[in-house]
Length: 593
Image (cartoon, rainbow, N blue to C red):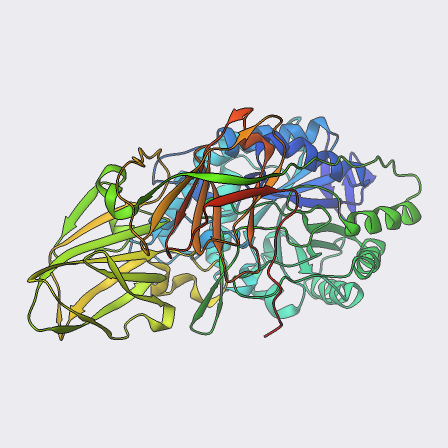
């Protein structure tokens, strides 16, 4: 059996070992493409892959676990091992990662009195149940048990959130109880305040720093902290940020390739490194995270390209080759290979094959729940997606004023299936005036959950609960007796495209391209408003014409030879009679704000 130790330096079987790692998230890359990403990491001359483990995908409903298919973590680790890579795992309750709710499952939210990321026994009880299932899979993969896993993380950037050492200790003891025998570490900002708050040096838990530039200064800060605590540990940057994530309605963030290669070289001359990200991949489905600036939430886009050494598709970028050249210069003895490059395909002007309004098929595709007052998504047992709230009101006067109180994130208000208003975040709660022509009228409020905050002070905010949290007012009183329809797109939908379609309503649009030789591609969505896309039933993510991304990546594995089905759910009434598959992603040119 091999042995990995942390002394004055990293030791693998007693010999000095420099960790040259890159982050590849198995949950952002389809299993059919794992080999491609991991091979390209090894081909660069790196020796290790790092991945987070998101709780919310492995326990999507409380007590229901999934470690299969796309989420077969064991298979991903074994694939890395086959290619000669070691593995760093970060199996923490919270991962940040620009991932929905930082990887925490949304079903935690209805537990009103529970404080997440703390020593609250109620929270630790939920973590314990999850860990019992998770570590059953990953402890046999440790290096001292014949696997490739070098070390594991106890919490993630906790020094940027709290200082509850009782919580950190509880997680550490849980990991030991579940059979973790490899070294355990923390990762935080390299400066003293975050290191002091987020570490457990008294338990001899190794500490690492996260940064993306000024390697000498950051490593000095980290070394000073180690020395203060009486430790003579090696230096490691657990997240060397080689790019950045992107948000809706903001320009794409880029970083110069040569600048990156210079800063990475500076870091690995002093210590070990994990590139965050090596391959970013895609926030498939509703899994994009959300930033926060003050009271404003800033949802992130579907693509997690990250301006990384591999692009969203997994192909090498200018950064890859700049790092390759730097590695040749610094480590001439390290073996490198030519990276793998995937093909792309195009198929233009695919005609519309059918369209139907959401209102026409609502009862066919969503179960109805009723209540006196509207319930939040989470109270309805729904974690992600859209919820449609419906009630009826009697005409009291020719024009009525309505207000949707305390909803998140974005609402569309309909009267008798005619769109009256769209409100987003801080606009929600403003007055909506509408004429009433009928004695009895139907009100529909379609609410979209655009992604929960994944980092910082808003993790516990009320706005993390989605849907309507208080109610809808007519004049000065709350309206009662609501029907609620959950649209989470987790189950196949029987859409009848022979039913009615109406302009300016949320609708489904169907396209059926015939493909001779499937390859990776990008669906151009610039002629649509806002919504999501399903490819052969697989939810590839969100689009929004505010940019900066105007296309969605479709991996080859989702396509088949012959007829395919693309279904667009679009909420703004903006659609196209034709759709195109293109070889390159499409972006909107945007100015810096």
